[in-house]
Length: 441
Image (cartoon, rainbow, N blue to C red; front, side):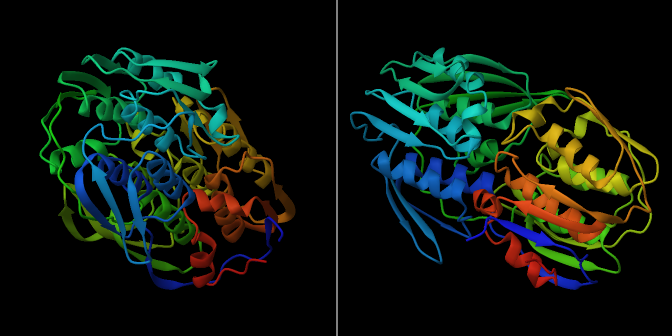
């Protein structure tokens, strides 16, 4: 079976309602916390992507009972620090940095040496950002120059720590929080603003967590050792997956879309704030709160006049997974857009800042990129009529899906490789795009 698609026609006008699968960040966090609960936890709308399936496989290897059906997922936890550690255990995190980094936080009690591995892309990413602070609990780690494979040697007497997280990485923060869960005493975290899904789940579970905030940092104190109750959770739609359809609609002609039950957690809505600054019409309807998370339906219309932007740095962490799409909007905006302090983009599945620049170059959009910034010279009249090939991007799912959106809105003859990459986060992406009328071969 061929591992590429061809797109040679822009998408026709559409007016649709759409339902997106569950949030990946919440799916993985729910599964990991359910493994530490005492009893049966159940989730509805769990994202059945490769990253989440890899999470369930790792939990099974750690002695956790998992039942996955079409309608729900059930995890039977054995309680805090009740994993079963077999000799020569190897856990494969696949492509998931969230799984790899958060799982290590739960393994600091391991009484046997555990090996963590991942795919080619994940093996290029920095794991020292979690192993270094986690070693202060008393666990020992061996890495490949800070990268995978990581060997974990746990401790039976973990000590609470004080940790300063200065990268704005929710994965690093959450890894320490999960380690603190199993550590008696108070662990203190000073963290640069980032996603707060883990904090909200801790609060929902009535775990001993206290949070203080100022403009730049969150101060999190966790009193470890309290048993977790089972977690029944209907997982809302993923805003990062929804973003592809928001941008597709905004850049298409005479189109409208209504996306149901989307997680609009304030730490994830940078994409909405940035797009509104650029002139895109987005409405949030039927807003409500579910177990600490804000949920809403998102209504989007085509936008004829797009504005360039000097993107506020404070919004970076809230939109870190959506910048490739935002760059497409800048490509069609009038004027020069400037995005800075985006070095964290190159810590993702591929060096996304560089790939964003490459895609724009292939489209014929002038841009200037540095280690952590990019200037994009927009062209509102751009219509692509040449052949474009997207290949060798470390199978980064967001590079693939962004390229599909570009092909369907700007024109040209596109050949986009590694379509299986979408299994990482959004297996039904191409199916849903076709439901809107896209012609993909």
